[in-house]
Length: 370
Image (cartoon, rainbow, N blue to C red; front, side):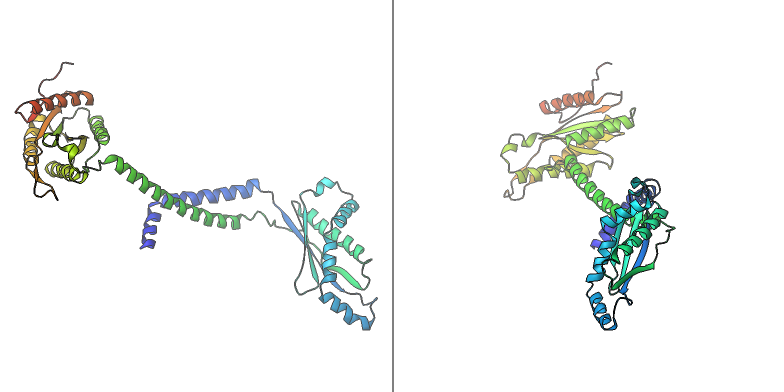
């Protein structure tokens, strides 16, 4: 189940994964070709063995045993990589010391063998090979004066390397693809979670939790969008006031208030069309917006809505007590390009008439000039 869930997230965020992978690949290639100095490695190998000329036959076995303890070969390795040997070699070469900046040396002893590997890394392959061989030769001359019973000599001299060991664009590009892919998947999952969180927050701001109708802020936004998208179209805006619970609203438990208000929302949505909008206008008022509907066409529908809302509501847990909402409706249609503020004022005046007279569904009929 979780695998399928993440697979769908990856499907939705495929473009993020693609973009991230391509960016990582391009960054890797640009860095490799334009910002990385090619570095070369020259390697010389040395072999340590008993000096047969200075070793009697009876001492040969002891010499071999000493080599097996690795102390001799480790000492020779340290001599090869010593600062003194390297600096003196550079002086013997009579080169500008600045020419050797950026070069590094390292030495390793091959396991289970009397072989020393000496490496020089730097930006110039010729200089790297020259240093490896020169330092090696200087170390050989120096070591011969320390242990006369042992020989150290070149096994392989350093050759001028033809290819740099870094950068390696193909290898770096492959690694960048993997990193970009993983990062892209992570970003896709993160985006999906953020989007889900924002959607939940948006729905929380969109819906009134007591009635589950749209909030007034969102209702007004939708009404403005309707007017902007179709500036010359006709629409009807109305407000329903629940006069029957006005005096008892504050004394009702919240659970019963939710039952009443959600029943009203359910009734309104059932009676209206799919593109009609229902909102919570105020504490005791609901708002409705009927696009592409004039006032005369809306009047009969609003009368029907009032009849349904005026039917008693039995509250769960109230012992059969019925609540009569006694809804009053004021509405107005927009046919002359009125602004939202003007339309709201007209509806408020129509609602005042329905509240104060026997005309319980009142339409605003007198329009101001201009």
